[in-house]
Image 1 (cartoon, one colour):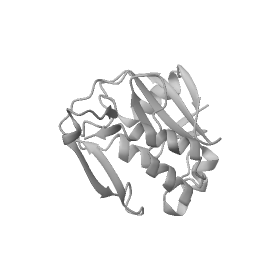
Image 2 (tube, rainbow, N blue to C red):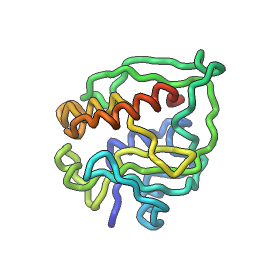
Image 3 (cartoon, rainbow, N blue to C red):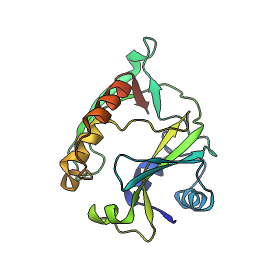
Length: 184
């Protein structure tokens, strides 16, 4: 099995601007080399048959991506309408500012198979392509953000994957993201 970095993931995970929410201490090329060399501790099923999550022990100083919302930090939540790419419609997002999350115990690359990436207009020279990465304390998946589930259901024309909403998964995601937020 071979893994490649997609341009979409490269822009988000290795933006080159020193952003502390990106993967730290390693280049995109070295990250891919590591994933191709080191077997994951666990392979988790993704939200669709074309998606897998590979759990690796964090070998970087990358910090957790999601933080619990508490009465002490709620005042540090911010929100805005943003698009992930120029072609996508902006959606409401929220995040913390001014917090220092712990270093993640696990990096969990999110992989799509070559056929799905081709449907979405991305050609790769590998079996799997990285589309994202979770930074977690536990070797488990963080639920997909509900707006991403909705975007996926809208189809590839709107930046999604074309996978319909799974109501139970959506409700689990809402329960998680109602009590957690990303940070910047």
